[in-house]
Image (cartoon, rainbow, N blue to C red; front, top):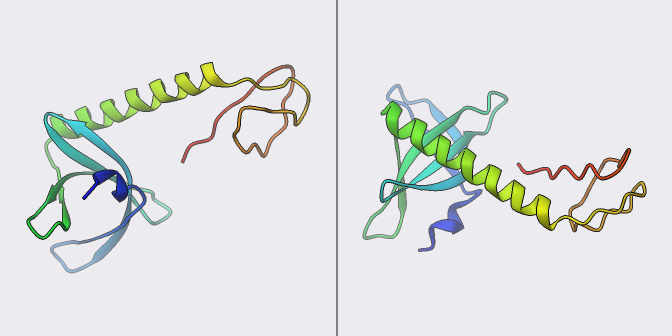
Amino acid sequence: MNPQNLIGAPVALQAPDGRVFRFHVAALVPFRNDTYAVLEEESESGQMLVTLVEVGDDHIPSFLVQGDEEIITGVMETLAARTIAHSLEEEEECHCGHDQGNCSCGHDHHHHHHDGCSCGHHHH
């Protein structure tokens, strides 16, 4: 099983009191020789959880919620650094036209360019 196939996958977690919370896999982050999934709640709160991804012999992944602040902080910092690096790489590759609506960067823009290139890539 390729862990990258998990991006966007729905995940339901059950609390000890029986309530079910629905998430989706927002990102996979390698940290300290393990793979962690950052889950984003499917609600207005958009709460995020850091979970350890374990794949059993049945090839079905399980998501173990992490409570260790050091792991949570490390995973989120790694994700932030990776996101910033990715954005900078895209910025260097971006060749926007300066005319309004004349962007050749390959991204779908729903905004207008003003006063030169303002190619802000939107990633969710």
